[in-house]
Image 1: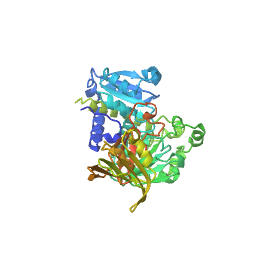
Image 2: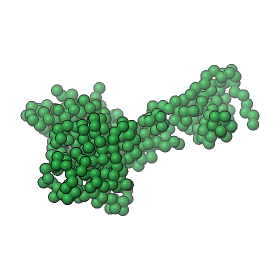
Image 3: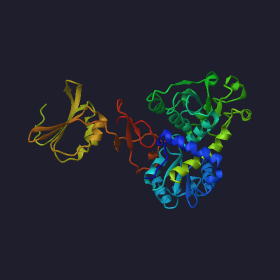
Amino acid sequence: MKRDLIDITDLSVAEIDELIAVAEDIIDHPEAYREKCRYKKLATLFYEPSTRTRLSFESAMYELGGQVIGFSEATSSSAAKGESVADTARTVSCFADIIAMRHPKEGAPLVASMKATVPVINAGDGGHHHPTQTLTDLLTIKREKGRLDSLVIGCCGDLKFGRTVHSLIGAMSRYANVRFVLISPEELRVPESVRTDLLEKQGIEYRETTSLEEAMPELDILYMTRVQRERFFNEEDYARLKDSYILTPDKLATAKWDLAILHPLPRVNEISVAVDDDPRACYFRQVLCGKFIRMALILKLLEVE
Amino acid sequence: MIIGTIVDGIVIDHIPAGRGMDLYKDLGLDKLECEVAVIKNASSGKYGKKDILKVNEVIDLNYDMLGYIDPHITVNIIRGGERMEKLHPTLPETITGVIRCKNPRCITSIEQELPHIFRLTDREKGVYRCLYCDTMGGKQ
């Protein structure tokens, strides 16, 4: 039976650990993987703009020796003519061995997975899930900190619409002795579903605060996010909240020496470029991790040994 | 008030007061040819007030919908003037086409033919969430 990846919880902790192990092996022995997906095709169906995720998927497939087809905006597909996600998924299943889909509407990749005959990977659905970003984050944390348990994780910025944060909380909640500090303006707190279904139901320790400075000294990981213009219906609300948190070298003065600063990117101004040269800034190393973990995921879903 | 005795039919009892008419429509009872009685605000020892539906024919019911609306509802199946069965609908694991997702960002907001499916995520609190976007479904 085909496997899909729609939500990070579709993978067990053991499977995630296995993916991380494969990704680390790819990093160490890239030459051993260059022909693994020869004659296989990945379809990237991107209904909204993306730089990192789409190029990361495409370069992952190319580095496995496979090929890539697809579209990078809805206007260049039959979606512009009103074709349903389900019909597109069925159609593309005839051409490709695996699908990566990004869609602005929440649940679209799930609908695709129900109709496609090939594995479907959710490459981000609105403000909902973004499991491959989470896998990227986990590989980055593993490589930067050497472990995935016993960590204090600060999530900062737009925690309401920030899908990467929701997926990260879902994934990290399954490791022992992990605590969250949720730093956001009142209007952009994590949704009630994340608080009740993920954190409280599983008895995960967390606290919410509006102050990044106050939270800084206790953090092992600082996960910064962008306040996303495209998630707001109202321009005034966006303008009021977009500069809520800007990370500068001054604010890092009280941080641990081995803090790891992550960001799913793109950033606008929430991390000052002056922070980029700080060894604790991991976000560009994180981008590279994204390619390797997607290679591991494609191998797993295609059942390539 | 006197409602005729049922020989073969169904009595849906312990409906939360005020919901009887909605349920009458949602269960499609308005389309039946047989006698149907909607009793509003009947006195109830347990709940104070309740609504009751009496259907003078044994028909198939959407038990998922009944369980979703209130698991305290009881369904009595009457045959030959005797109560043959007393059923207690429970909260179903999934409900389809009973409530609609109100999240404007959900895929169901643009794809009209997708069924609105909600799954039970908290049995204790009776919480249902949209299968596609996880938005909580409100009671009708």
